[in-house]
Length: 493
Image (cartoon, rainbow, N blue to C red; front, side, top):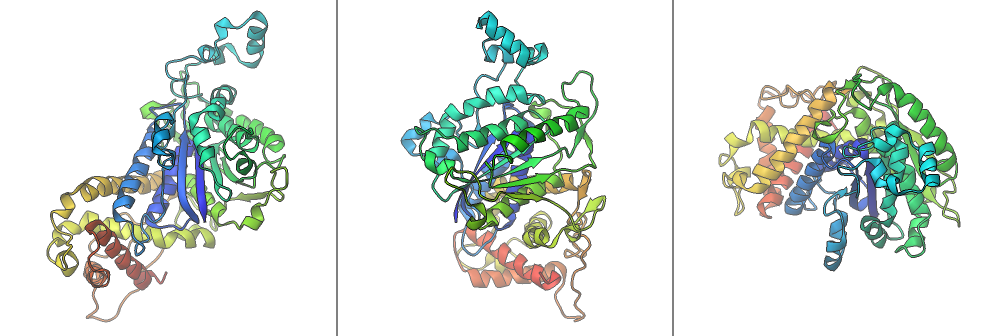
């Protein structure tokens, strides 16, 4: 396996990375030794981006303390680019976490960014042909507001940045790259072809330029899947989404798919859209999670499952036989569940997400009353006791991650189209009444353990099997063992 570098561009890129993180936290398999997300957004205060960064950080904190070969939860290693860089180089890296910090966009108009006032007469005339007066006066504090012509100029700084050089320095021959972008806005539509061009045309003074030129590169381009409410004071107008999409697709046909610069290109969108509040950016931009973002995250997993033979490049670095894929569902419905997905998607996510949901429910509804009462909690030298649940691993990192996981499921369910894999009202009466459109296997043995009694029995068995690793590992190992057996017993998966 190899490293996977993910460039998540704009708000949609952040939201897809968020969905991918929850899938990986639940234990969905991805064939990568390490995953390095780089989020590119000019809007430093963007609510969607900052939510995603917080989730990624908590994922790392949880994994560092609890990862073991016995547990599938949090098994994928997620790393910042900064963590790949030698200590003596880190001070030169402009992005200490998952974000690429763009220069010259905070509190600055586009005309100031291009130094318009100091251009000579001929270049001012050229700028006037390429950019409207509204473009030139645009404040870039919260992004490009659906103007890819502005975004393409500002984002071109990526190729000269320390982030891009450090990415190149750490890119090895068998590593892969995936680019996430929307096609109907400004940041994603501009950033995708620029990043791809800079990879395929890496200059000879760039570290590992030969590897980059022949890299296996996949991407998903996300067509309109939501709208925004009309607002005469906003620069964002959903009426332009389709025309912008058509224009971008026409450009991509010549300069992306048409020149075979991608090894695999995925498409997704949705004609049934819900209007979000018209927020141009900053902290107010916190869109509900959408199933399209989950499906887009699955495209990354699918890309990593493609055999090297399907992603070969010719001597010039162009793909020999580019792969093109769209996402479809088995049954169209206003509300989706695991049952409406195709078999491949369902097989990849049903079991791990159900296991994680069961662990989440136990932590939320039962753990506090079980502490120190059962063998899984009070046996062995290492105990899951009242002190354990006051430590940062549990009280801060895991609880914060689980709160975000719960919010994600709620948002997915109330969006249009909704994705409701779980019954959110499942609880003490029948904890296994958790899967939408799936009934748990019933036992007709009157002596058989039921509900949380069966769950606790599985945890007790897990404690015997696992022994006494560090407390954080023991906790995650026991719950992975128990939920794996419960899903097998109650749902035959």
